[in-house]
Amino acid sequence: MPSLHLFALYITASLALNLTPGPDMALTLTRGMTQGFKAAWLSVMGTFAAGIIQIPLVVFGLAGIFQESPMLFELVKIVGALYLAYLGLRALKRSIQGTETIGTASTDGARGVFWQGFFTNLLNPKVFIFLVAFLPQFVDPGIGPIWQQMLILAVSSKILGLLNGTCFAYGASKIRVWLSKNLWFLRLQDSLLGIAMLGIAGYLVFNRAPGGRG
Image (cartoon, rainbow, N blue to C red; front, side):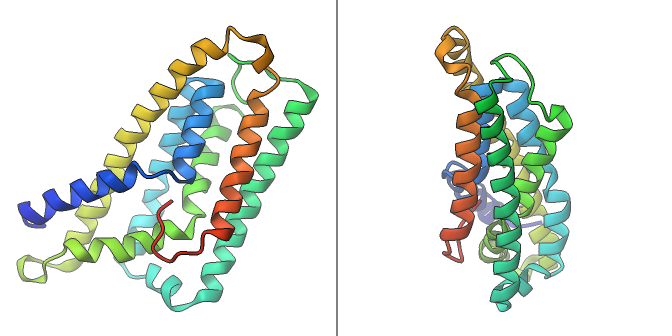
């Protein structure tokens, strides 16, 4: 268990970083504004669930491969960007066809929304790089096994992200109440989602700072 002092510093820093705009936040806000709290929260849960894979990989050192292998880093980034671009183009197609209105669930259904949030976070290699660069700063080898401390910190970060994401989802869904009364927006909801997805894809491709957070 990390020391109380280091843990408090970590939570403060993690909270600040969770409030930084990134792909996950963009997706949550867009879902909440266009489809309501349930869709946004399912997206947040997908992001949270990605930690089931990310945390063990980071704790046992696989993320270090990304730091040592630029080619692998770029490959994962490209795969993630292509997936998000596909989702964005599909949303724009729905917008052009005018097949959805505010108040309906995504044509992907609840599972589709969840998995989009999951893969948005999982396929962002910057999340791995962030964890590898950030967690060791708050570990004290003198008070216990390093892997145990990193595990506690990583899980705490994911839980904090879940709480923050839920708050953003709720706030964005409240904006939707106003939007639902404006018919001109009905054809734009999938346009916003599509643009957000394409923007996220571009973010993953062009924001190449190694210490970024998703």
